[in-house]
Image 1 (tube, rainbow, N blue to C red):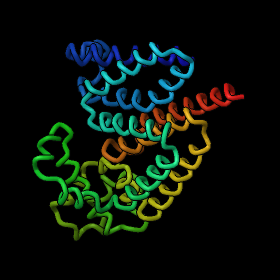
Image 2 (tube, one colour; image 1 turned 135 degrees about the vertical axis):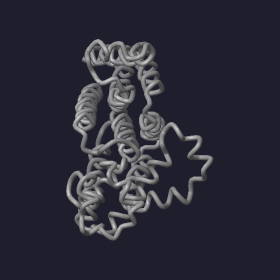
Image 3 (cartoon, rainbow, N blue to C red; image 1 turned 90 degrees about the horizontal axis):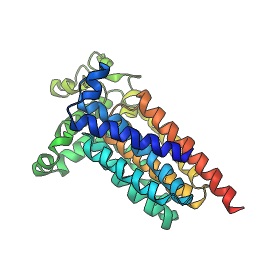
Image 4 (tube, one colour; image 1 turned 60 degrees about the vertical axis):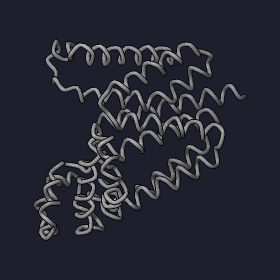
Length: 283
């Protein structure tokens, strides 16, 4: 099964690389949308499935195949337009290494980071506006960093008007018309029509308020607690998936998109398979 999954990952990457290199002939032939950013989704899917897949291949001594998969996945992430995927890959590598050799430190760091990220989400836009110089935004122009900061500031300002329970799901359409934000600066209200804040933690605050943020922290901490009981290799892979998913969610697309939940779900299934095999080998 792992070999089949590796072959499918390589095949998916070939389609991505060929289509992007040749001007989207595959999408044209299939009558699909002619947008290069659509390939951000398979790049992100490959990102979260890669840690358990590569770990399983290495554990089963398919090292050359693991190297090939790693190379193709890296190529897919680098060729895609997704800055979130690139960030997620770097975070996943760091989390995997820390999870393999510094397990207690990695677990404590992940817990503290996730709690702080959620607690400070409404302030993230204003904080980054002060901390990031214009040169940094110019260097990150392809990732639309300034636009993201502006959107985060707008949603952060709107959260203050509905702080406890938020505006419900899909605040992009409900926030601008909400009487609770009628006094919000019009410059901020302009960015609320983005549909979502491109920050999962801020989206939770916007839609579900402080109550939702508290539940999210609780759920994520319980996930980390569950990860802490996994065998060494599975723990490192699981932490890498958790870190990559969190990093992507904090800077990327809408939190509730179905393909993203399905990708993380597939990664969870793979981690559970990997953990079962690792326990069986240890007997």
